Image 1 (tube, rainbow, N blue to C red):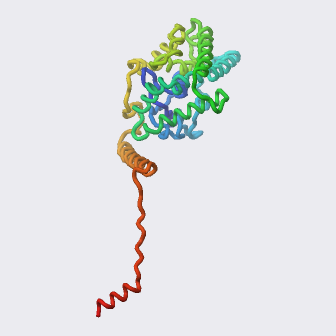
Image 2 (image 1 turned 90 degrees about the vertical axis):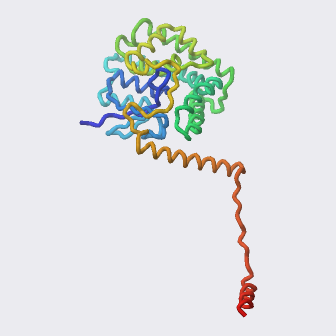
Image 3 (image 1 turned 60 degrees about the vertical axis):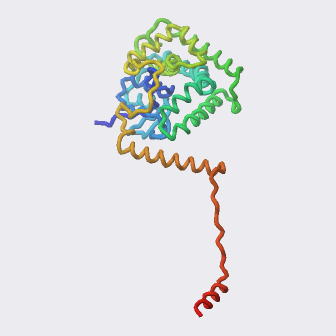
Length: 320
C-alpha cells in the first residue's frame, strides 16, 4: 500500500482550517478532489520538509511547495477536481485565478499585514501567541517582510510604501474583483454548478479569511458582507467540507497545542528536544544582543611579562 501524501500547513483559528491563503487553497482543493492527505497543522514553517508552508511530501517527487504545483501533483495522482470542466470553463478558471492574484490578493496582504492597526492588534498578535518560544519573536516580523516584498512584486514597485493613496487603489481593485465574483457566481452553489472545482478552492481561500477574522479596520470585510451570495458561499463550503473547524467560535484564539491531526512534532521525544533548543537559542540570542549593545563587554587581560633573568637571579639568591 502506497504511503499517504503528507501536507504541512499553517494551523487554523476563527473557524477556518488554516489562516494562510495558500494553505487554504490546497486544503480546499484536496477536499474537493477527494485526495486522502495526512495533514500536519503546524506553526513553524521550518518544521516542514521545504521550510515553507504549504508543503506536500510525496514519494515520487520529494517535497513540493506552492499551491499550483501541489495541485498539479494531485491531478497526476488522479485527484482532479476539474475533471468535468469544459475547455471554456478551464479558460474561465485561469482568467479568474489571475484576477484574484492581481486584484484581490494585494488588498488582502495589505489589510492583514501592512495596515498598522490590523497587523499589530490581530495578525502579529495571533502569530506571536501561537508560534512557540523563541520563534514567536522572530517569525512574525520575518513573515511581515516577506508579505511586503510579495506586495511590491505584485505591484511592480520595489520601493512601495504604505499610505492612504495605496490603500485606496488596492481596495478599489478588490471591491471590483469581489463584485465580479458575486455576479459570476449568481445563485449557483459553486462557480460551475453543483460540484466544486479548483476555482472554488482559490476563491474560497481568498474570501474566507475576510469573512471570519475580525479586523479593526474592516473595509474589505464590509464589502464582502454586502455580497450575500459570496458570504453564503464561504459559509456553505466551511460547513460541508470543514465542519469541525466551522463549529469553532469566530475569533477564538487557539494557543499552540500538540497537533491533533496525526502529527508527532510536539510529542516526546521531540517536545523535550524542542524545549532544550528553545532555551539554548534564547540564551544565545540574549547574550549576543547584550554584547552587541554594550550591556556586556568582554575584557581581554594582557599577560604580564616577567623578567625571567631577574626572576632566575632572585631564585638563586633565595636558594643561597
